[in-house]
Image (tube, rainbow, N blue to C red; front, side, top):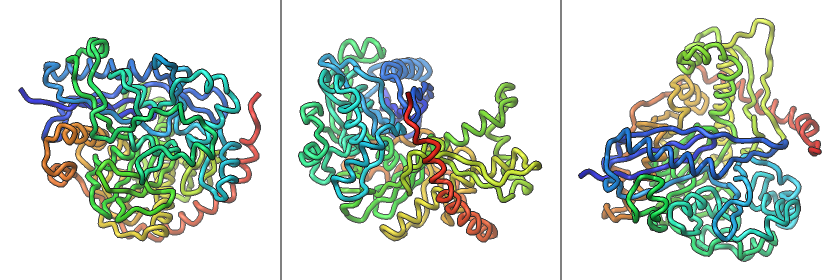
Length: 497
């Protein structure tokens, strides 16, 4: 019987689940959405129970649609968005909602940490700052908690009964020493967060966490004892899904958020460095909080009629944005949930600039796609200043790569060709499947198997005729960000009652 890896890629708005074969082709896939809640200004939380129920539903759907036996699932791995916060009691039950990466409640705490460090290291969205927020604003939660987990750790516990952190996710807490591969005693001393609250066991991406318990196997409809591996946080999973395992390999991701990541030639003690799932490797990571969420916002508010009629709104958006009449000087700043990079400003917000009475929907659509591209260009500028730019072509992954007009616009603005991977929405699931395979020791060369199996289906080459236009608009884009920054901070500095 053929064997498959069961993989779950938990994003900001849904879980992408897939059964992946040994050839890294997807046998079956599904996407189960869930809600994010915004109970106060700057907050963003999700229900951990909903995440677990989504995993159960997705598993049952996959097994039914693929018509395979539980014994054909050789292993399980999952990823999540990283930088999430979840306190649990001694039985592993959640004491809080899952605080999301986009939650920016801890601005004041981040400022105090930066003052202690003597430099700007933290923002109100960083886990370490949010842990201080809990210590100050909800101390009873910290006192009664047994462990701090992220969403990935919670789901691993639900499946195996083991309380662990996965190493690429542990790094996002800022309490972990990525080079030494262990919890950082100095960071606990600096923050005052109790060391007892983090699980001592930190696993690698391909490491066996445990095996499905009888209860979990029953709920999932799988075999008791099925091995469960560490997996990765989302951007580390993307490194594998984009087959970026050599120095200079680079990818861009457009999902709810957007980012640029470049595999490093060597470790440097800089804020952008991240540990790769590939042992001994690193990558530089530059993230924008705003990506596909801007496209979703555009569709909800400018394509309501077509959405209600069940039309293919993505194709319609693409057609209208590509029309020659859409190339007007309308600007979009894409910071719906604040700015994290390259300039950190959690109180910044999105803006649509230079509208006039005759501005069309297509021109607004074009501006949104260009705004995403301009922010990625800003990330590229910072990456180039920090590390140079020795990248042949970018690999494109994530749901945003499903819209060709978006990819072409980004290629035009960046000035770099972009090769989209096969099944870009499920590239992370392929990366997770490789974690299972390496954990099972199926490959003599470990993660290098991606050199043979990485698949790209389309290349988008920059259109140089648009270079002057984008250089001019990009200057206005950055100027608009700085001009509006103080206004946003004034508007969004009010504390909630």
